[in-house]
Image 1 (cartoon, rainbow, N blue to C red):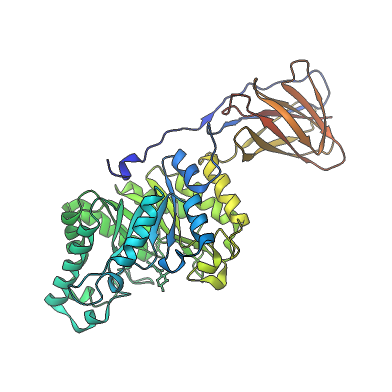
Image 2 (image 1 turned 45 degrees about the horizontal axis):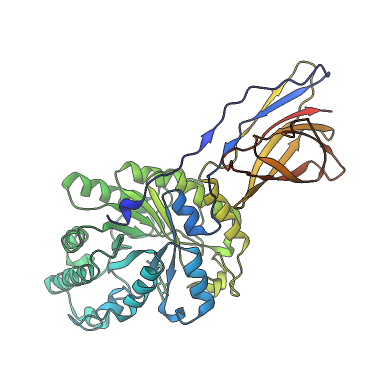
Length: 450
Ligand code: XIL
């Protein structure tokens, strides 16, 4: 079974419909009913494990330059379940002189990945950049044949070990033209991309074959449409293509766009898988990182996410601190945001709904899912509309609330219904709930004006 075939949605999110709970005859009562979200049965504490629970992968680029650094390898081995060699499988690294192949560097990454049960994205077979010097002496048929020989030899060498190949990288021009990028490969004829994909399929029929590029995050952009048209054309003519890779370097003036989820979804609708292949975000905005995960999870054909390096100090854009770990190997806020989003499984938080009762007055209680541990989970509730609220929280037995903060709490005789009132700490409070054997149920809350 290929690594890809192991992908599969093993868990699904469940929304529960709730009946509004009307509380007594108090005047100006407002009841808000929250649909509670059932989380995963065993929320994970690492990125890769969490992604795997949802049938996805979460990976990183690795570089042999850092494989001797135990801080680096410790994080890589612990957190990720997919690896992309940052430079080691590129043309200049694997074929430094014509038809003389060198796989030593790439094999180091492959061996690390294999020994840590991580799947491997191959990157990249045909690209205008990072070519060995001898290629510049070739053109026309000689260059075309050299490129095809390279694709065939490298893909054959790693046959069975690579779950996805970036067959062609960055073949389209930036800007509004929608044209191919001018390059030595392009000048061998417009069919060079198709020829590369056919050669890759012939060499390793088990690998998914991706077209990979940057600045294809906005669906309406000419470059994005050009890639979409390539995929449509390949599908129509039976040219092998299985996926599109969005590099997603949200940095240096190319920001994470609001329509990103639409783009992922529209690519998937063309009949290909979607992979986020080189994610980094200038200054690692935590909300943006979490939203990228949510966007991927919202599209069932989005297989996984790869961040382009482990620590900020390892990044190709280290000056922008764009990754999930700082130079000391500490988890950044973006890490927590990503892990929470992975654990939430794309369900996000349930939207609040408000029912205003005759007599006026209203308040809204919004449940925000918090960190999930092995035996317990945290919940935050934000109240709006009044400062004199009474929020009733109902827990499903055998779960039990063990700790609360920022409220004064009383309990009914079953211990499952908690009545929370302000204790002077504001309108946001929280609590920890022990699973006690039920790790899927989540609290419901109603709010009334006190
Ligand atoms: C970058 C590497 O991170 C650098 O170490 C190297 O010097 C240049 O290439 N798009 C790609 C990646 O597809 O291969 C690039 O990686 C970043 C942009």
